[in-house]
Image (tube, rainbow, N blue to C red):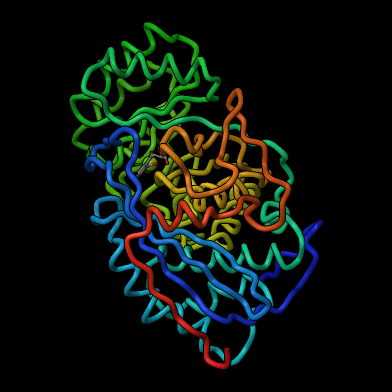
Length: 388
Ligand code: OSB
Ligand code: MG
């Protein structure tokens, strides 16, 4: 278990938890988001608030959707696993938490359910950073004051609709455009985009919509000078992706297939991708995300931070993670206002010319707006620590 005492990390501060609250929150996306796996407009998610004996709150977000179409987790399975298996490891343990890195070790005997684990671990990291008086970015070892971000655009009804959106985001200064692709919405669409925007930084995400039977079709993607093609093949595959990468000039990036440091190590060893999309929820927390980052840095593999249509809480964690050095490619963390009429954090996340200024306040650096949280909360459940 490596402790990460990097520059700026003010060392240990024992955390004795007092209680926890799980909020089921429902916010409506301004526009529906369509990918090859489905269509989302009502965005349900769980927020976790952990409160320590000094009254310090930390916040985490489960990025699981209501249906298991990105991975096998759902909001309800996360709620169940958090309540019955993960929270007890934190609330009823005899020992305090000395460092957030210990949390994933306490969860190790519980298989998968990474988004549930990440939500709790994020909240512990937030408390830890607040108690040691530093921004979360700093506690993680991040050094950037600003991060470059791109935008991920869902599948649209028509190509002109898509071109219009791209025009708009390019004008706003987003550093790269990602489009979602699927059979029937891929080569022709990319050709049109390149006709209008020959020079923009462009990539495509298939969310596992293809198989190796589509090899000849996928080879055509090489003509568009894409930064990468994200997760073209099965959500749990690293073998066929290695075969595909050998046939393509364009770098492949894995998203769904990478659940852990071990997955990342194996994928890179096999040559299944040349870039990794790190999502905190998918890999089970910030500590594991950092391990993958550190390994990719050692291997010279660029990484970027993916998104799951998060509320401000998850968005804040993504920003902190992205300050680590090897996040050299723009991620999917766009402005709050791209998703929500109003976000539940103050201030909201804003993007200026494609960059987000990393907050300097301790912890995640944004405050949860309790009035807005109440407005969007469907239900809550509270839990007490033993000895609290
Ligand atoms: O594959 O990166 C993905 C959204 C939901 C599920 C999966 C993905 C996405 C996105 C949008 O691409 C990222 C965002 O804007 O948060
Ligand atoms: Mg993706």
